[in-house]
Length: 261
Image (cartoon, rainbow, N blue to C red):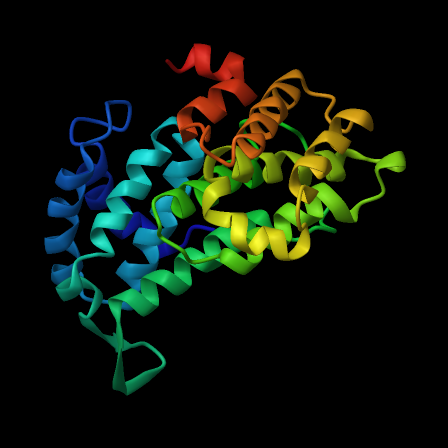
């Protein structure tokens, strides 16, 4: 959710990610980090740090084909010790400070968690590139793939909800939505989730749960069925056949990909 501070900060941040214009090609991750560091130091505030993470979540939704480069930039940024340790005035306590890492991480968690949850929220259920819950799942999977690990427990809960918890005989649109969010994670970043997933789905449980989606005809959208096949192939290969984020999105929404290539 955007705020008044976003109108103040987003133009400067956007120029870092898209130097020519928002419709241009995204900058290389190293260039993005080089541009972000002076901005973070210049503003040195919780409002900027939070607004920056809201921008990340927003462009991951509006520019999903760029999400891998966005997350690689975050990985590089989160490896800059002098940036992470930067102390910022605590807006709730004038006598204390908080690190940029803490503020940015907490905002990023909130942004993604808002998009992925709640499993009983029946709004925004359509399997569409306009649904921020699906683009949020792609962002979450990409963060895991780039080892920016902020939502491991939530991600595992989402996958288990999508593959196991709902009654498949009476599957509805919400079940299908959580199934799509699950297979995005498995197809893109299954190897980074395997250890935690196997606590809930030991042995061949993950593969069987994926195949159950075929047997129960969970996915009505053709692109979702195609991505399910990719997720199964990845799981059966021991996650050596994970697909890139852009490829997963193109499989799921081939019309979107054709219009935005």
